Length: 460
Image (cartoon, rainbow, N blue to C red):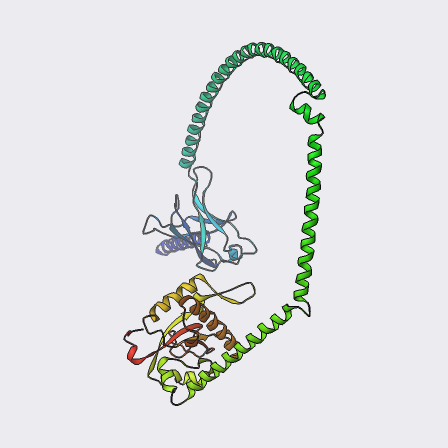
């Protein structure tokens, strides 16, 4: 008996275990616990009807379930819904797939519908975030329909008011038109009477005109005498004859003047001799000027007068080489260079031919720099140092020379400096003491060599 009871108990327990295993298998299969899965997330402003375990469908096919709903920390943020989807559907979920919260029917259970992406978009990575589309709630539809009906009613009322106003205006217009027609009839009668009077006046004027023409033809009045008397014609003929004689006299005078000019400019005239004399005089002046310049240069190099010229600041700046200038030739006579650095980006712009020209801002920058240097004596030599950064030494030399000359010409004109105390020095890409600190500079530097005893701003 005990054995039979034990057999029944064992059978009952075994059946219970089988039922439990079958139920567990069915639940696990329904929730896709035995299938390979991957996780994705989507963001929503509202999660109406969603909860953990809500179904996820892909193109209408059960694909997974909702794992977690993360509540945002601020009202401006969105809910993050984490889901898991079957791995065999992974190729259909692309980066442009959209997750939408939908319901079965009107009041059915909510689920997440994932749309397949396009072929051009890449497959979304595990743990990626998809775009979420908020659900459309029935209350929102009712509210929108209510607002639409209210707006439509308001438009109908406004239309009724406009139609009433239009009919009233039309009635007034008809009344005004009838009044205008009556007035026009009266005015037409007045115009007809006036036209008759005008026609009578025209006939009277025509008669007077016929009488006037007949009087002119008969030689009566001033105009008649003008048409019939030949005295005026004779006077006009005499004036024309006198004009011809005056013209002939002018032509003869012009011919005499031309002959005189040709004789003056001819080979035997005084013109060529005077021109030759002027050329000889100019040549003599040029020779004297050249001799004076050579004598002055000789005095500058004479050991007796050399100190005097250097004290006065008269150097042969054009003969100073780049190496001698860099070696401090102008600073050996107890002078110190006061420099103001000017960037090419501020000074120049290129014209249509690619040539650098001074800009308006560049001229103002030069004037500002010179305002710092005019406090020193005007007999201090001024060197406009040119700098340019290029790939070739020759092009750098030429570019820096052009920049220095452009600035020097403006300084000589604007500040009336002595040309003998102002010159240029093209230094290419070799700036010493560049304010950039990297050994490079593009632009110019105004270097004024001031005697050390005048650096305190002494007299000029």
